[in-house]
Image (cartoon, rainbow, N blue to C red; front, side, top):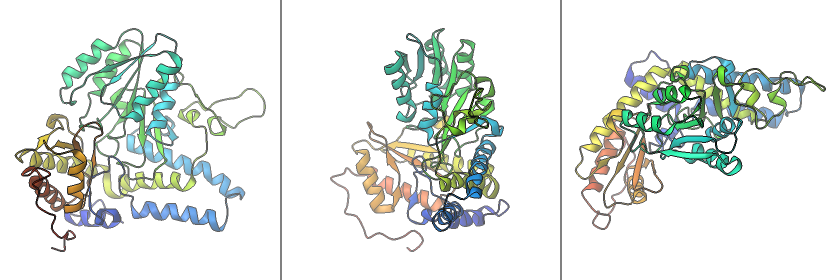
Length: 412
């Protein structure tokens, strides 16, 4: 178990031992999928083994389900520094974005405002509204996300009295820029619009005190920076907005003690937005990963170290001749995005993986390569990344020397 009181070097070693995937390569892709803690995997395996050997139909197992879901909501609420009743479980960030966006009472001619840099998980629900309800969709050009004043001014011009919803990312998945969410939310609220935030690249990577953002709904995933299983997420809803975001789908979990005859009472809190069933091992795993980060590692250490390492990485890569730093230095979270002119992004990834075991990703539609720098990364790994990027930057794909024999980090 990781102790929050260990010296930094000992704590990093304990963290990496608790995250076995960090030994398989230079893990720089938590923005897609984070490494799962041993403790989470064990908890999920225990539940799955119980289901296999004892079954899932006994009354005590059935009664345990709501308790496990309550634990997961409470774990997410702790991460967000918010009340438990504000959290609904979902199956992904996209699920949460759809639930919130579709829950408004849309009419033809209503408007939704978003950015031109959204992930499809947040953008697609708005396209569906356009198709189903005739909602007008306005995209604000945010550039690389680094000029906060210009972004706020652009939203100020875009949001009008017909705007019902403003939807945007907390951290852009492309460049890693932190968006000026609160300032945009204040403009939106002054004109009667609700604000929905895609928190996929923020929660677990940077501090998120969601109530301080002054937004109405905030969607997040399990499997990225929170290091949980796939197929889980959450939607935070401000109590003042709960009556404006109505359930599009409803089921057993949406109602407070479902009766067989009227009146049918939805939960008064965010649980009304939950409808279907959840995979029990994944619910347990989601809660366990959140708890592991918050209680055993410490969110303060997680956020400070990840941001410090990301800035260190950005500075080192930007100093390499021929490397273009796409991430705006003045608005960084934990994502570092670069471009090597003359290199396709997929070719950069291929060489980084084969030469240094770097696990990262490219950004579709660009030649950018994105590195998700985590608290569990070591300085030695990031130095190795920089050395390999420098090698690539000195060459074209055609002139690059043949690959040397690979050595595992720490063995040579």
